Length: 374
Image 1 (cartoon, rainbow, N blue to C red):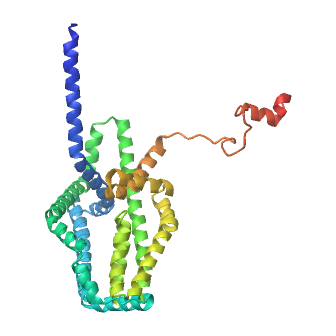
Image 2: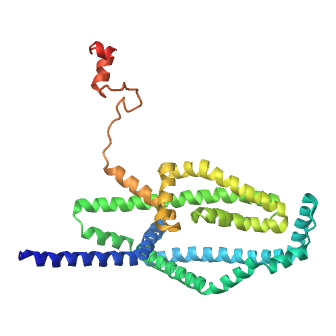
């Protein structure tokens, strides 16, 4: 046996063990990495406000705390208002539910010539197998729901803590990163940081603008229909539909539909139809134009980045996909060398089987032989 073989086997096994350990650690910490990425983009979103307050003499840590406090007060107050409003409307809807059900049953009997009655429907629903099975499964899943809620709160606190440190210690963090790099690389890191800051700010601005337009449109509809709490519902629709990806539209539209149902069931149909139509208008007309101007990426690239981000990190990936893609595109555009487009690439037709450039020029000039002219 060669002398180097046992040592090579030991080194190979050690490297394989290190790879397995690193792979296991990465899969265990991927949730933490995702939270740090979210916190980084959240810190970029609030850093301009922190910089303005810091330029006026406020300590950076205090400025970051004030920004977080303002955002927290707004979010908590808004959801408390919505919670009280929703509780009152649910109580009203529960009290009037028998009359709603009677009107629906009368319409069905009159339209389809049936003989349905509310007591029969209530008995059949209460004694149905699927309802009893659903109650049993729900009782068994209370522990899982509680664990999910606690896990979500822990992740939220983790993101807020990291974003606070990123925003409060932004200049120190940049200095720490640049101190381990040569001078020519330091400029690249600072340029990438500034690009990420600008693109994230543009993304937040575009979402806020679309939330404003969506809120105004839905406020006009709800006010015309006479749905209660129209201003609060308009703010709810605007914020939730724009800042919660994928399912935000459905969450935003469910509450106005529910409250419109308490006024008139047909109003709920009108609100649902308006939500669907406005969503198509926003997806195909409004969002591509606003996003292309503020974030400066192609609408198809924006859509593809959202799909890719949702596939990789779920709703969180869809939320940060557009600013991340815009930052990467702007950073690559700084270093990718571009060339002038030739006439052939502009769409000029070419003859099949002929060389790309020399044959075309010879054909134009008439210098080629008879076979080329043919």
